[in-house]
Length: 235
Image (cartoon, rainbow, N blue to C red):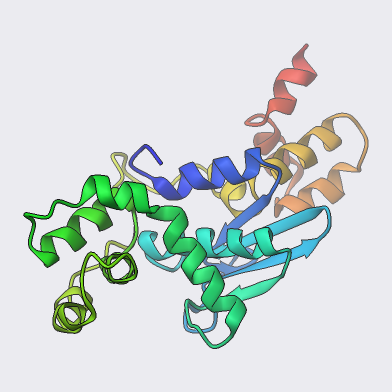
């Protein structure tokens, strides 16, 4: 995956394939009700032929990327689930392995890691290239026999102590625009479908506002102005 924000890149790719993706760090729009990563990092709902992935954005960027890939594993299996990156069940272990293979396929690993690198340098290089955490990169290298389990046990405390970047750096001051927040929360596909339906008169604007969390008609109008529906309405 290319680009500085691999989470957004993967979200776009998943939505282009027909999977709904929703991201949020709070319950609905309530800033007083944060979502805890101790409870869950993500989940997948499936009702064939539809699938929805939800990601807890209170998590670090590397963890969000792994959760997205893990939840994609649930979609591949056709099995809903809740992710905490644990391995309490066979299906969760399979999805963890799927996520690691998806983000760091063997060919990428072998072309990225040099035999002249130290084990820790190999971990850092793969983490940077794949977008995974250093700990996830370490275990991927172990699974591919690039690093043996004894070396991994020695490296694990060092890897676990590395700081984790919670969010991508922003070049602009202040928070993101409201329509970007809503799109991330409900997903681009859902946002576009609801705004189009509202503009086309297929659903009442009050219902559209409720679906998008818009408190007023003016708020809904501003959201519609940032959707493809605005172009449709103007044509």
